[in-house]
Length: 341
Image 1 (cartoon, rainbow, N blue to C red):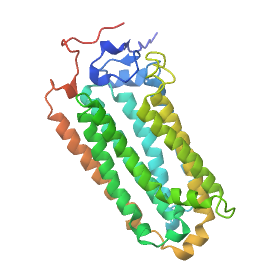
Image 2 (image 1 turned 90 degrees about the vertical axis):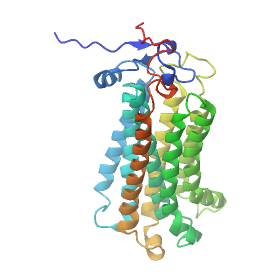
Image 3 (image 1 turned 60 degrees about the vertical axis):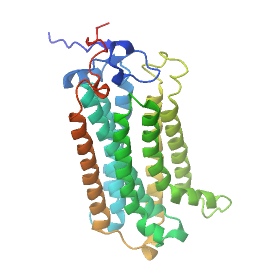
Image 4 (image 1 turned 120 degrees about the vertical axis):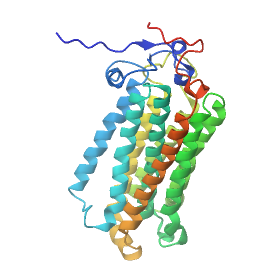
């Protein structure tokens, strides 16, 4: 009979420091796992299992939503829907990339960094996708065709380069300067979020008390912003595991909650954007210029290539780092390998 032996798991002091997570005391995988071991570990309870599935399953939910919308919206011929198409593709990309990063991040210390480089790049592109939809469908009436409206997406593309650069660079500081690393990584994602949501903040600020301005889309954006703020809080605070180390190793730690809030927020964002896409089409069609192929696919293609080049540059720098450097602590401080429990 064919039997499959699941990989061993370890406690925090049995793995190199580069793999430690704040407040997580057990459930670690071997720091030099094979690709097969990484995949098998997603079917056993480790401190990464819920992280993997809370983004892998939503990937297919968003793929299903994309396919369902493809049957009712003309993504091929109608340029009006092109920004929404770009957004939907990036919404499917970021949770899948995150799931893969969490799955294969224990193949080696270098693989861990590279996995998260790719994860950060996907999140940066998702931020650009948000800017595409907000610029095309959610811009306040008074701002349509303004200078800010015209430069909104190009600036967001530049922001994606800043986001990827800062977040990737933060990994090089993770062990020696953990507070600076955390501050850079947090800034890398907070700054594009604030910029992208400026049109929403304006709409929300001026919609209260005006029944005509309060729409289904605005309600959805409120839910999205609530979950986005909760996501940021969980990412920065490491609660609840910081208050009770070891109690939330497998279920309930902040990164799992962070994933869930991010996905729920994206769901509300998608539905709110869809409401604007359908509800404002006639009004925007008469006042705003139609999206062009270069403005949509050209911009996102250039952003993808640019972010790919940034990731490649950091990967090349990582490969030149000596194996004994703190950044690549692939063995225990005394040079031994992890011991099985």
